[in-house]
Image (cartoon, rainbow, N blue to C red; front, side, top):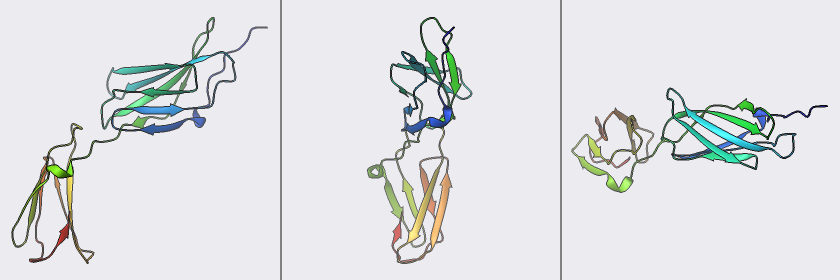
Length: 160
């Protein structure tokens, strides 16, 4: 009889990610002596990353922050066609900002802040100003790395 090459169970996949990498582990194939290739393809792009492994895990590195990736795992063995299993799409994380880069200015009723931009491209920002000791919150959204919370109470302290 001809042996069969078994793929992996997509539901067994466990994911972790940071700003530039996605790691996946999965239950091994029922076929012995196989190797694996994890493929990460950026959604909306032809960019593809491959990671080969003899163990049921893999990491795609040097990815772009804040992007969605299609994942596939190929089970490989000499003499067989690859058996490919599609996994769930995953997102790389966004880079935050460096709090030490923030510059503040204020007047009686407003607080303005500027900061160094995130290393992730195409992001927007939301500045939140919460009055200390109160539930009062003011927010300001911006496409640039600066924002102002206005209509604040004079002489009060705010968490930013």
